[in-house]
Length: 157
Image 1 (cartoon, rainbow, N blue to C red):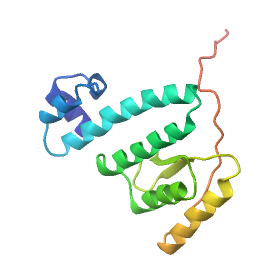
Image 2 (image 1 turned 45 degrees about the vertical axis):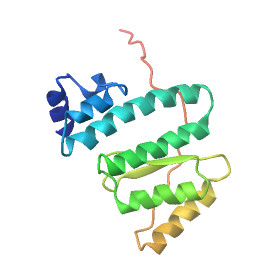
Image 3 (image 1 turned 90 degrees about the vertical axis):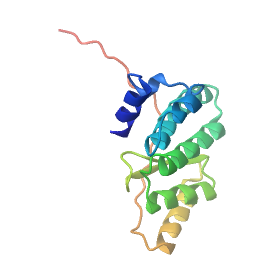
């Protein structure tokens, strides 16, 4: 709701139409919760575009930094994180993950970490220990391997 309200207040169809260069001017026109929500959306769109170029160039450490910037923005500007997600992200980073962020709907969803080969177990242990120290329920882990994106498949009749 905030995103649509901000777009309406700015006179744009979508916050996607607000560029990073226009962000300061846009924020000056908004108040309350619309400001941080708009800041998150505009900066997140920019981070995605930058991440695409970085991935194509193989700069995964920089991609990891963008992931953490995204997490901070989701936590601080969009306010959809929670202590469990923040703990998972911080523990993964402290244990050597290149980057980490919450993902999904937030409010206790999932965190994803970009890690180097051979570090999975130590990062899982670090997150598990951090959860134990904070007396959270034990985390569950899933391994995902990067693969080619979705593509259109021709339909034959």
